[in-house]
Image 1 (cartoon, each protein chain N blue to C red):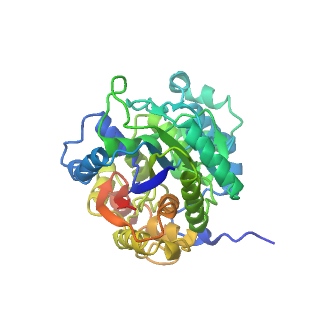
Image 2: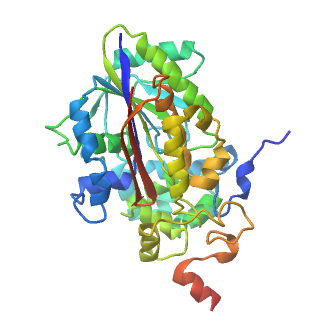
Image 3: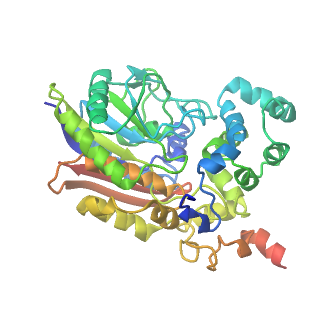
Length: 147
Length: 283
């Protein structure tokens, strides 16, 4: 019998469950290695060569090189692991989280200062909130895309 | 015998630690966050515990995907602040209480909660940010936390995390364990993490002020009912990382059966991506 996964219909959200974890094992373990200063230095010196030391898929390596966190998450990455890449790049959690919305850093920061993103319209796929697929990317990037 | 006299609940946002460590606490953005803890720092001095039992989650720091314990109790003599990628936080090492920790492990496991016993682990911002908020900035070399701390790490990284119900009942088992310890120690239990926040995907930045405040109300007045809240409601209403709030139910379950005294309550949006919630409850 299939497991109950009621979290599959939350818009703009990937729950890191056993299935995702299995998919992203080496991607996340690579991230983990960046907790050592010596490894961060080696990664920065030659990212591609460092990535090639890991049993990651080519697509996972491309997603890391592109610093596309949404792409990394689709491929099994988890934000707490991926944060080690951001830390290596000198980015804060806010910069990392914001990068996944399409908003600029300033737009995202302003949204947070104004009280954050509302849950209204963003609870279930198919509503009309700003996290829904048909409203991506957000911020000015979205206005440009729609123009 | 030892007693749990109070519980503390607080968010453990990493940016709060960074703001303190980089001397930004007085900036207009951060000032209201730290102001919410002015009372708490004084309260800590007036109600100094002998031991803090600190419930938090490891953020892919001590536990990679190699091992994912659902509940892990730190029984070591000391724990070093971890390098999470930005370098270790400049805060004092954490002194443990191996004797009480082992006692609690033995009692709680015999009560059917299968803890993982950890004799070596570094502790990340989940544990050190609450200490900084409650005790103020401390020099990493000459400073010290006010008392020994027992780290208690809960898996909230890989789904499924333990249910609110499981956490609440575990809290009760921890209370029983503490009360069977012979030495007359004054123990505080802290539940950390939350409140509403989501750090991933197009829905990043979700905050739910109304839901958070209802959670605080219910945590104080009716934790039994709150403990039945299913995971999916946390995810939908408080964001994928808001699920950290199940850890608050461990601390609440460890409190006495009578209604607690609410010594302090604070709520502020935002700290980085997160709604900051904070409560001090006394038995």
